[in-house]
Image 1 (tube, helix red, strand yellow):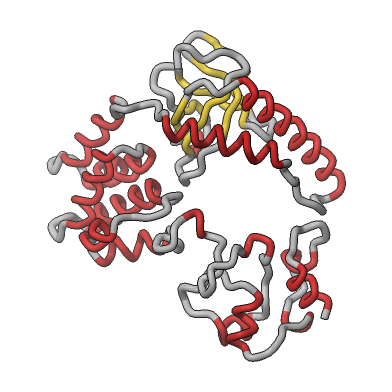
Image 2 (cartoon, one colour):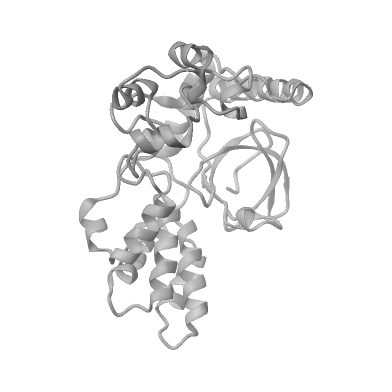
Length: 302
């Protein structure tokens, strides 16, 4: 972090598991001033701990994840993409966001290369000092239970094997107080939010209450974050088939775990083709400019 300079791009980790790219705008003593790429939102980070400095809880829970230098061509393409995103956002703000930003193939390639580079070069091979402090608080059986619970939740921002092991131990032990189990589950949910898989043996160790809480927070836990938008029946990517059918239709075709179903699978289960009358008049179905598959467009107009 000490070598970061204005114009460099690094990756952060949000408490919900998102990993946004950030560009350095200034270096002031022990503070890195930056902006969230694709927006004009300013961010500040400690050059010592890598933790964000801010008034909002999510700011304080965001940490720098990787600062490896990217290839100049990748940085240039990301900057160009950033300019186009902001120009699109400014235009859409006036028009009510009636379309979506469409990245170029060069944009996609630059983002993919940046993500792969950051994945291969994590910033902290060793946990920061804060992890040790929070761990001590969690394991101190003489400390107030509320303080231990807060520490367990806070550990959910630090993605290290040691942290996962501690939270799993707490959430697996019948001797752990209920509130501490719940807090450990919350911490694990933060760590696993964007994972593409969690070891079955680990999940099987957890107390039923902990597992239920994690599944409530991460409905896609068993399918993985990258398949979040996939049809639960056939695997079709439903990002361009994002719709809302009438409640009685959904209740006829969807199980509790069917968070997303493509149009084809809904129709197969329903036994007929959908029509405009099956879709309520809500922005998800009516807003112009959204990317929609041809069959979804057809059903909305039929």
